Length: 417
Image 1 (cartoon, rainbow, N blue to C red):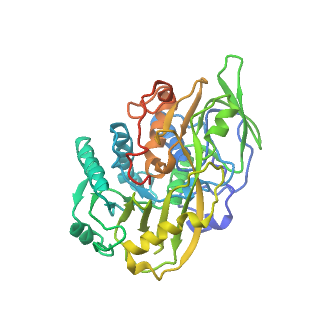
Image 2: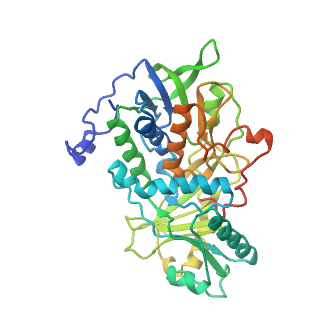
Image 3: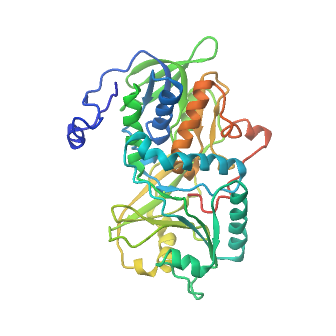
């Protein structure tokens, strides 16, 4: 049974025979589960789905302290791409992209997945060298990417200003045509419905306040605002709270949390055909299906566990966007928001067992988490079910920070979105 706390009108909107549970009460969770996943965002819900679907583990509870998709899943770039430089990262994100391509059909839910292409701009000689290196590295790893001249970039994205007199002149661009966008909260709801149909319990308004361990050191369950819940295995998949939850089990992790700002414009008719990223100005822009221009900047350089932040952090980004796309200079901002992202020292995630038996971690994604959603859940489910990593996530361990075998995407991932 799924334990939703949504208004009845949502159920009415989807209809009685659309696959949504019609129980809107909040019954108490079971006393014991085979596995608990902490975090009801895209990653946690996808892990629960794959645990049930591919590994036959359906006695699973997803615990969410707020509402489903109300954390970073609902506050992100919506960008999907796999053109990362490091071999390990390319395999990880391309695995996720492959799952994205058939996901709407698999879970029978419209995710508004649109492979409209991701264009990364080069404004300096250094940018050109770095992005051409990306193109060659991606091709060696079987990941699509191609180099475009300024005229070719303009042809692919007509609103782009390629004047040589611009403050940030466009010298070229790297294009991944398989990249694109998806509707962020639709991913959470699609996975929630699919997991619930397989018997997973999804419990909202249930904050974890402690992690219990048995005499043998293994996890035994969690303490929550709705009482104690027993479990043989626990997976942490909660953005911006990973280190807090790990501390409950006595583990320190090399994860820091940074605020990340974004905004959307007032909605307009379809005018922007792709996704554009620029590392030089730390900016990205795309257009949502509702017509809003989605604009954001890089992570802010101070630590915070907040999901808010100052507006001035995106002012320079907006100025650069207006110069690169002059047709948007008269648009008004509709709303601004902040997300909080977990980051590791090498800006690559952790998907691994922890030193505590039965406790697993999926975190430290920085701003790469949304694009990895199906892949992260798929690999976390494999790791939890088999108590060993999949070959793709085997390099993404906690141990790498002790051994020094880092997967350094900090300077290699272009703009980190």
